[in-house]
Every structure is written in C-alpha cells, then in structure tokens.
Image 1 (tube, helix red, strand yellow):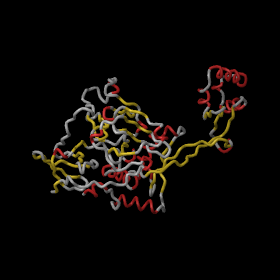
Image 2 (image 1 turned 180 degrees about the vertical axis):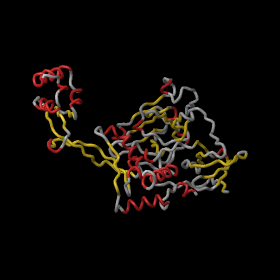
Image 3 (image 1 turned 120 degrees about the horizontal axis):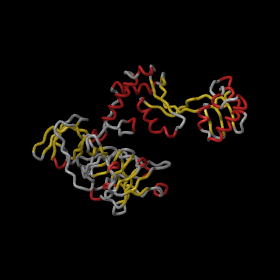
Image 4 (image 1 turned 90 degrees about the vertical axis):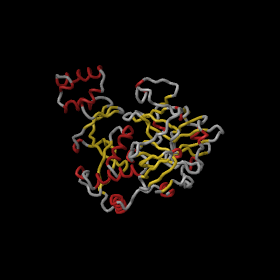
Length: 409
C-alpha cells in the first residue's frame, strides 16, 4: 500500500485560453469572497466563462477543465463591455432551465432532487443561466430545488462528507497548496485519523490523514454527447454507445456499414414545374402555405368571406367545398398570390460518432432550424483514417489516460 505523498508536485498542463492571458497561479483560499463576480457569454473569438475581481483588484477566470480559479489579466474591451454583474457566486444559486447550480468551497455543485443533495458537477454554461437567486431573497416554492429547508447556503459551515466504506465517490488532496482535480475512489476503511481508499483509475491503494483529504459524492454522469467533461466515466459511456451504434444492436436500426451519424437541415426549393411534382405552395408576400387548409387558417374573417363570395359565383358553393383544382385556379387570379411547385432537400450540418450525440445536437439547436433537422446515417466506406481510429477505440487499443493521475502517480 502507498502512503499518500502530501508533498508531490502538481504538474501543470498547457493552460490554453490565450485570449484571457491566464497564467498558472491558482487562487489562494483566502481570496474568497471576491468583491465582484461577472459572467461573459463570450463573443467572436472568446470563450464564455466566469470572472471575478479579488479585493486586491486582481482578475480571476474560472477554468472548467481544471476545476479552479486561475489568475488572468483584465479582459479585453469587447469582453469587458459585455460582462454581466452577479452577486457573489459563493452565496447565490444560479438557475439554468430546470437546473440549479452553485459554486461552493469545493467547486461547482448541482442540486439533485432525487437524492435531495448538492452533487459535484461541471461549471454551467454562463450563457444558459436564466437568473440568480440571492441568499436573502425568499423565492416561491416553485423556484426552490425543493420545498424543504435542507438546502444549505454555501457561505455556511458544512460538515465534511465522509463516504461509507465500499461506496464510490471522489477525492482530492492538497499538494504544495494546490488542489489537483477530483479523482474517483472507493473508501476502504477508517482508522482514527487515517483513511484508506483505492483509486479507481490506477487501482492503487492509498492512506492519509483524514483532515488532509476531501471527499464528495460521485457526480452525476454528463455524457460527452451533451457536453460533459472528458474523464474515465464519460469515455466508458462514449465507447459503450459507439459499440452499440456501430457494431452492436443499433446496427439493426440503420443497416449501414462503417456508420457515421450526420445531422441534416431541411430546406425547401420553390419554382418547380407542376409537371414534375405533386407538391404545391401558395406564396403570398413573404409567406408560404403548403396546403389549402394551412392557407385558409391564416386568413381573417373578411378575407374568408370574400373567398366564399367568389366561390359562390364560380361554383355555387363555399371555398372549402370546391374541388382543389378550382380552389387553386381561383387563388392564382388573386393579387400577390403565386402558385408554384416545391420539393424538399436535406443539407449537411455536422457529423457525430454516435446517434445520441447527433440527437443531442438537434435538441440543443433545433430552435435555429425552424424547417427541421434529422439524423441521417451514412457509410464511411474507404475512410481509412476515421475507421482505423474508431476500430482502435472499440478494440481498446486507444484508451483514455488521465494526464493528472499519470503525472502525479
């Protein structure tokens, strides 16, 4: 068994995010709370993110992939001018759709109604936050994660989480005043002030002082298809879905070799001669109607009455009672009305390894494509690079390796 090395050096990877000029200094604990918090939806060439200003005037930027605040220079003017001020993140609940988030002393947490507790999670997308509940504000019951008073504000003292032996959870340890990322573990036993646990990534066993190790419940899995963080759990989930869709039971739904899942957007081509299509459209100014009923439903009462009068003169019946051919002939004689043939086409939007990922994109972006989106399964025959990489994933030749665990191990 290895005794936990409390003096091991945390190796920093490439920080990236050059637009924020982020350096590798991680925020000292005593810099909370900050004097101001902001969120930025990003913009051209900028990544959405959380900012805060410390008491000494220094700027910090929340790095989702590192689970920590990193020192940053003051944002560029085009970002600075569009920052949205928020109350302190440590003392407020952020609402994004039907989800509730908060940033506590151990990082981002999401309220899980099923277990009535806050669980660790990725930072929410700043652009998706609908509103912020201030600590002193008493919202309606419908605005709270539940109607009880069990939700503890993050600025209050919270008892440390002590997992039951045998339960999967996550742990992290202080090293040179820096906090490495949360790591999946199983606690094996407690002995006074010592705790023994096994790392689920390396399968090694460790022990250490209980007051130097933090634990938290196992976060709910957010799959890569829905923007989740790349870790061992999300990688295993991805490989399982890839296997199902490309070589498993999912093949029976598409019967396509070397499958790739393409999102396509629907478009309509007007101006086709009626000799070549049975589809007709009624074009009126900027509107298009693809059936008589759809056109009729858009009319107001005076317009309907005028059509019925014209129909009585032509066929001695109301407009909707006429034969469709006569209906179209009558409409073609009206001002600003054009009758034309049409057909639909499907254009490429993007590609995905799995069907779930393609469907997730549609659910996330369908509001931008009012004419419709669909998943089309295509064959990547003779796409040797793509197929070789996919086969390596499925065979286990290409695996997920946690760089932090490897460098610290």
